[in-house]
Amino acid sequence: MFAVILLKKKIKTFFLTICFFFLTLLLLTFPKESLSYSFIGLQLWFNKMIPTLLPFMILSGIMIRLNLTENFVRILNPLLCPILSIGSNGIYAVVIGFLCGFPMGAKVIADLLSHNKLSTKEAQFLLSFCNNIGPIYFISFVLPILGLQKKAPYIFGMYGLPLLYGAFLRRTVYKNTLKADTVAKPSRSALILSAVEVSQATSLLDALDDSIMSSLYGISKLGGYMVLFNLLNLIPQFTIYQKNIFGINIHALLNCLLEITSGISRMGKSSPLIILLILPFGGFSCIAQTYSMIKDTGLSLKNYIFHKLVLTGLTSFYYGLWCLFSPSSFLL
Image (cartoon, rainbow, N blue to C red; front, side, top):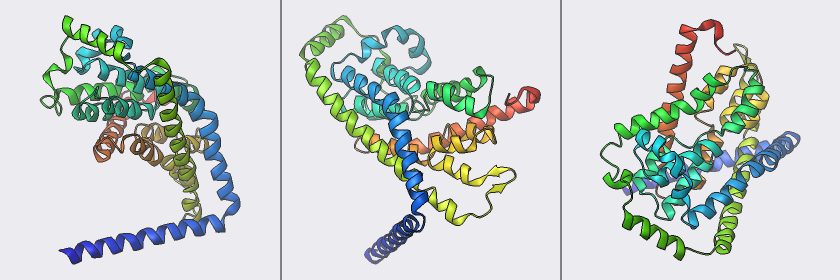
């Protein structure tokens, strides 16, 4: 048994060594392309990710540290609690995850879990459906590039399906695994206790300082992932010589799977349906970035990937039905 484990470890080490030697060789063989891909990753990080994500990371961190999350979503509780059967902190994770975009959903869930505002099971449930592409990014960047005029059907496909999927999971897989008091209305004593907790919470300046440091650390890691996965586009360039199959640019498709933003820019209007199907999954860069947000929380990345694949399948089914029953309006 020990010999088998040792052999597997040696094979893994050898395989990883070969992979990283190959990547280093690619960097040296294609220096111009390497510089270009690195620059694209840094540019996307600096121009897109920092201005759109960093403010929300800081503000959300402050609210979590000052125990303000439940009050923040109180107006939405009557709407979302019956659908998802979760408490106010869970509703907060859903709202931020859907409105602020990937990977804010994973970060907020990880922050709430680390501050004991969610149980591990609640966090795993929320992670399965509320870490998605942001609506501002989707409406202002994705749809115009794809040349799609209608918005409502695609918005439902991008956000309505995950919400319905979350409601389905809550009533099936997570029906008996979440605490019964998760959705209980707070009693008067609980409200008094909550007020005491707020009064004893860290000061605003301390919360601001901690949130800024945590957010800067998180956003810098995301930048590193964007640069790395853009550099991995050297691999298809080196190995694939036939760039188009059935009218699909294979390099651009692999670019989407590696780092979705730069891939969408390269794909353009050529294959909108393929991009719409990749978006729920998010690409390998999104998977790696999600892992960076949850790696110290005990949450399962495999479980997250499984649900992303299920959502991709549901999205395929949704667009398949649209094409079947209204082919004239499909992808207009």
